[in-house]
Image (tube, helix red, strand yellow):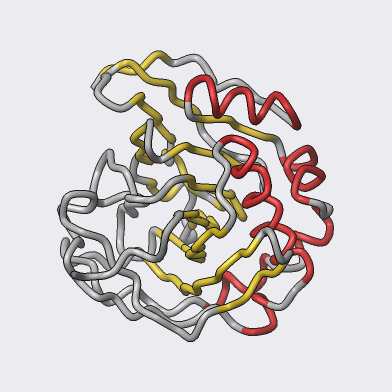
Length: 249
């Protein structure tokens, strides 16, 4: 795939909705993003320490030991104004969307209650859901939230070992939480069916990339250690799907 090295346009408020509607992606700096979802960067920053306690991902089929994560599911009923955490459930994708890990019921450690119950976390999930519903009207979102840490302890870390892909949902929010002592980690977004895309590197904590997963594919390049100590890249990936969670059968 070839990429146009221009940065993805930064958009806020109505411009974010317009960008998502026009081309399927929008990038926001931290302060505008926090304001857009109804919180502050300072309140979001309180959540960051939770990424220091993520268990290793035991499902990596490339044999890697570079990814740690937690996972939780929620239902946002916009008509009732509720955001409800579901009983813990596996993460599942078909092979059509994830050739590497599709077809597996992957039971990840749950997001800690202190994180999932925090006001800033709930603002993140609800605020993004409200924004996405302005692009495509959906009364109920089925939400999966993933805390990721990709590290360089054992060498190269791969944020997207499956390569350029879609997640099989309606919308995705990729939020950078921290980036420490690494090089690489360039994000690339391509319109579905095209090899002409955009590329950029999320560097500011709590900056975000919003995607219409029905219209674009995305990937992030591997990270390498940039100093003598181990480096890492922490993200929160939130997916929004109409009609129900992805499940086998």
